[in-house]
Length: 315
Image 1 (tube, rainbow, N blue to C red):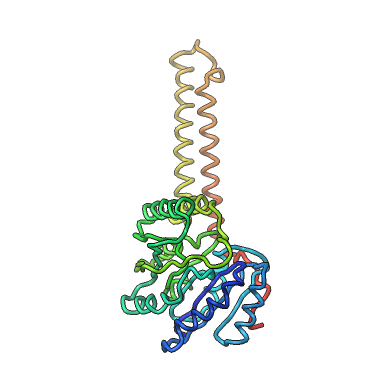
Image 2 (cartoon, helix red, strand yellow):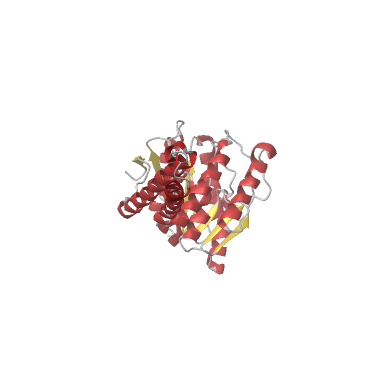
């Protein structure tokens, strides 16, 4: 298998037929063997019925159906586990990503020996106030934090070498940061390609404006996990030790002051510095314990899929 296409979707029954024909027109006659995986993320319309029809009509069409809506990251994770292609393409099912971009991306992966190509929707047909401006701010922050010079981290259409998607773990809502996750795993040959952004023909976007807030929080989480995820003691233990030492230093000063400098002064327990020192020492101890427990969890953790598949087209 040369190319695998993974398409997560939620309630996109109106778009599926046209999208599938577009993929066929773009790839038929190219000389590449390809497969398409439709991942139904708990649709409540007849999307799954259409996927079953497409799978019966074409042997290279496949589908997975989640028991409920688990999210785009989990849908991509499930699709990545199933793919067999040397090159993997992800794209959205709403017809805003063009299948005509697939072959140029694959050719660049081959000729330039890249690990990943991310689409860049340079010209967008979205709301300027509610999508374009927040998206630019979001991408600016992602570039600054990750030091990966991409203009559009969240573009749905991307192309990968098989080794990339078989190595990375996509969870939570981290689909926005797949290039960052890949770079953290050592796949640093990352580039971008300007792609056409189509206006939405059917339905409405499944993502609200809160995705940008979640995106910034996820970026902070990703940065922290990259820096300290494998050794949480380096963060919590160091911070806890510093706080404990500061509190202990205050306590020692208060004790020396009471015993040798001002024996007739106020009781130590009547001085606010004592309670500040006590609280800092307690917090420092708790941070240290958190780091120790984090180390134990890292060593014993088991990766959970985070989704349940209840139907497959090849059952």
